[in-house]
Image (cartoon, rainbow, N blue to C red):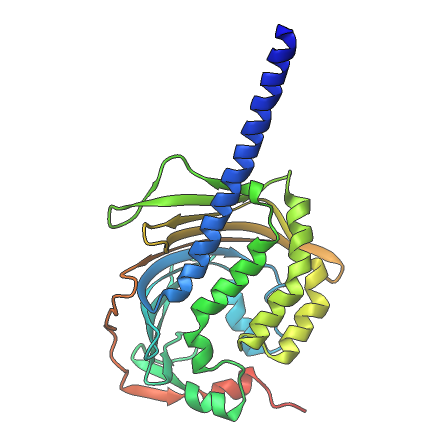
Amino acid sequence: MSKKWVTLTAVTAISLVSLTACTDNTKVKEALDQAISKQKEMTSYTFDGGTTLSISDGLLKSSNPLTNGLLSLVKESTIDWKGISNVEPLQFQTDLKITPKGSTSPFEIPILIKDSKLYFNMPALNKTADEFYAIDMQQLSQTGKSPLSLDTLKNTSQLSTSLSNLVFSGVDAKWFKEAKEPAKLKDGSSAKSISVELTSKNEKEVNTALQAKLPEFIGTLQTNGFLSTEQADQFKKTQLNGLQLKAPSKLVVAIDDKGFIRDQTIDINFTVTADGKAQDNHILLHQSYEAINQASPLTKEVPKNVKSFNDILKLITPAKK
């Protein structure tokens, strides 16, 4: 009798532990889902971060020589940034510092969006550091020459939420983990740390879920103006079946006591198939957010030495035949 009770007790204990683990993991996933949705409430913030890229030609390649030359500068590089973003009215500034692989001389690209115009200086195109190109985003939207618009830029938080929800909705809750020790933010406060890891155990499962979501993912980018119809169709034809996430890959986020994601790290390995050959890619990205919804004023002034970007746009986007 005692052996039966011992066996029954052990089975019950194991079952309860398994059930509790499942429930806890479900709660962890729900916490991340809620934090992702919470980002839609960010109307202003400061940010800084960086990324190290190792991107193959199969993913970043253009038939246009100028575009291809610009892409070649970033696909094997380290990029750092810092800036301010306000949604209404749309105001944005950042300084990109790009260091191509093997180089010790980074180049900087200051960017400013104010009064419906986007200003930037790019060493490869501008003659001096004080010469800026300007793009009238309102005019560009009205002419229909670009799928990108001011409304699109204002809705980047909503778009990011939609895309993130798409990606994580197909991932089983058991792969979501909360760290025992809270993360420390820059302001000294504590935050809940949640991670999702891609390993050899779940690589196949996650890729199956990803493939099912990719058409909708591309469609969402198109609907929100980040891809033209032609670009979306091209992605669907050439990229969907060839994209595979590879282990080890990992996402880690820190969620503050108000529910906002304040810090995130994405370390992802993946392959794309081009010309029948799988090409390796790696992205390591880190970004943090501060002063959320505190309406931080911009510190950059509208440049005085400004040139129209229309001529460059004609070179990057040839007229349709």
